[in-house]
Image 1 (cartoon, helix red, strand yellow):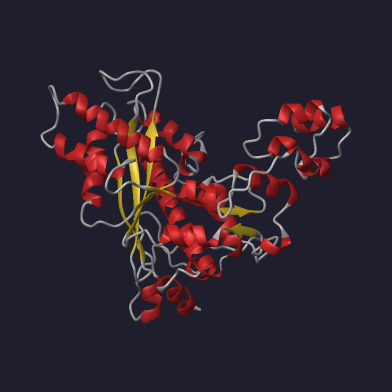
Image 2 (cartoon, rainbow, N blue to C red):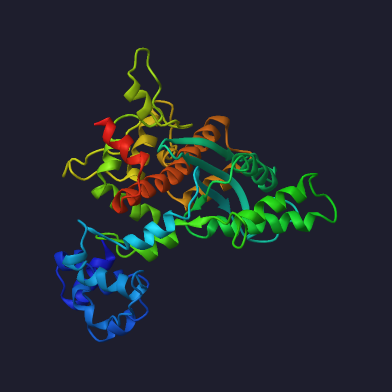
Length: 400
């Protein structure tokens, strides 16, 4: 039962199929929804005239994104279900330096802090994941950090572990959205507050490192979400640039992603006598074994299942017979950041037994790893689309 469908069908005489095609509520970041509804314009297909287009070419303006969401991609610019500002992508990519570092953080901000001396809603950084892409196209999940022990404040150890992961070279560091930038600034501020007393011995070095990664720093992180907003649009994602929307859209059209990830190569364990091609195809992982991320859907084999849905299914499979009576199966299927923060909060209480604690930790590690892999896959797809793949393209074509 859907209260939304019932109310809108009753109020506006809409059919379920009309509602399924979308309403003005679906228009991405549109400020005039209330006005349109008041005027009786409720269907997405009828809202095109209300969007005043601002041309930002070669980039994509917000109004152009909204217009394409309502009217579709212009036929002459349709690349097979997606639109891309090729030259914007190329120019951006040519500023990047190998090896590429993809990082994602999981954090908690609660009203009543878990740690003494903290303010309400002060940031706690308890986890990160780190993938690397080399110039030859090879990819590996090389590092991760997770600290969930009750009472232990993780932020400084988090910064220390991240520094150890990234200080070995000058490769470009990527994030998805400004969240990582915000968190690193918070951690640097916490370290600076400690300098008058109680600071760790390496506080100054950690502050210096963190400041290189944040906005204005010598190695400031590249925000792939911002690049997506400027240069990429796909059908079916409602104008969003969420990583959970962009990744499935890229997987639908990318031949390279299908080639690289359709076999059980992610986290593949080399077998005796395995041929050279199979060994080269394997992608090291810390939390998955012999896993395929490009899996055809039952309804349409040409369209893959969404990776975050696969992660949920993977969690359910791992439950096996070890699930205790009454346990929530979602503890092994954390598939979004809010659930990760909730899981961390759950682990701050001592009445969580060791079996459940282990299960939640494993779920957190898998989820965060997928977030950085998602960035890798999106970049590989974008490189394919604009002809900037180099060795990655060669790897993909060699496997099949």
